[in-house]
Length: 490
Ligand SMILES: [Zn+2]
Image (cartoon, rainbow, N blue to C red; front, side, top):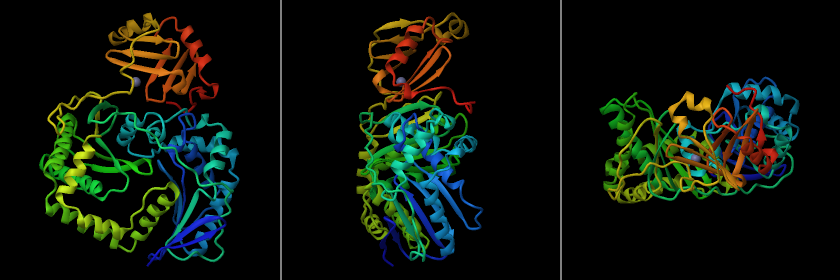
């Protein structure tokens, strides 16, 4: 079967015959990476507002918001799909803004995330609070999203030009897509804030994780991570009984660049051991390559997946992404061919290349000693501004903070001509006023969030005499970026 194309109401429609029942997926080139810290959650709120208008339906239907795309999808008889698609489009053209408050509460209760929290932290360290790096953050909270942010975002991204409908059968009679007019959006690439070289991080994460940055469509890179996951399952889970779950994902910073993740859970107290197994297994694979038997196994598994008639839907999803986001597309046959042609040496070379970009993350209290492929120690990374040199006016901890904790006694808040900084033990966090992405304001305190991922607590409970710092923050930061605490904050 080949993929067919038509245009209905200005929307690109692609379809390929799959097994019944038919699946319809309306994909928009809009995800969390298109938001800002101040508008975090706006896409999810739009999705909820649209879905809240649907009547009770007796066929399978749902919607998801990811890092790059938002999807509305349903399975059912053709007439049901026609009704579903029309209802979603009509809702997106005329969002029930009066429901914002209610849906804000629902979304807070739902507490969903666009990716695994371990992957989210890795993205935030690589990209800061922008693009895919927005993934792990909550932002100001759903109740702090202004209605005009909802309407502006919907008008920009939820349009006929920025949508693709895919179907696993011919377009049913009466199919309409009454979406507002608008162009296909161009998504600004998000640059990496890190220089190359593997680094490890100690952060608030539930699992041990690793991210590798590489080309977005790369069968050898995908193969390397598949083999790595299987080896980890053998060693960390079956042989040593240290882990139960091993999983992975990916996220795109631009059409040609992907972060690929693998994360592994660990029995309490075994985190450093599991992280060493993860890194050393990857190193070993990058040095000696997979065995031919491992590659044959991956090829057989991939063939099994793509030859399943239900795979049509997954392939259409990939194709819709490529159309909307300008990502390169390879058909399942092309993937199969590339995987069959990959040799152990290809896979090793690709993995060795991507291990230079590796970020490894472990829970905060864990310490690691790892060496890179050249035998040099892998350094501990942190936020992107450790090179900042102390300067400006210095504020010391308040009496209360000093009384409460020994650690707080060494902390210093700095106010410079162009920003604020926190020195906390060996860590330096500097946020330039021009790079502020949000300020949480509550009586007598400001929490300043920076583009690089640093946050500086200008907090009267922590530091004494900080009125001048608060005045400087208020004077230099766009008032549109300042928000009060969410009523839902715990
Ligand atoms: Zn920092």
